[in-house]
Length: 110
Image (cartoon, rainbow, N blue to C red; front, side, top):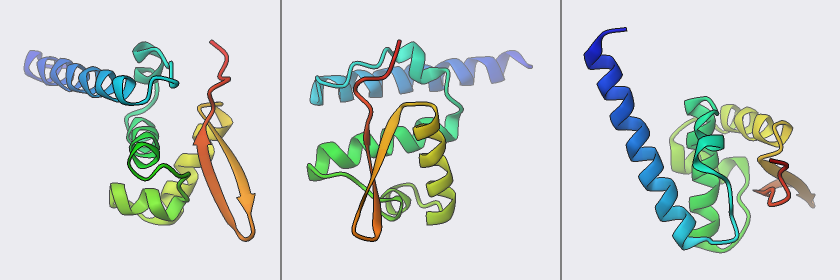
């Protein structure tokens, strides 16, 4: 890995940490340490942060379709990402009528 690539990675990590701090100020009940979230793969970080953004903006729980509109990734791929986050206990999901909704798992074990 070249030095320039490492510097770019460090810059991206700093941007993510700054974004997480802004989210933490907006939604204080979410208490995920930045380090835990940074351990996730980048595509899962994007999906998780999109869920947080959606909840803070619209004050309701998103579906995979809602998240796909934010990220620009297809609904089926976002559904896989969301289900992976559920499996890792970052999110919870529930069904209302025919739709699956996702919410943040506040009881996530440390």
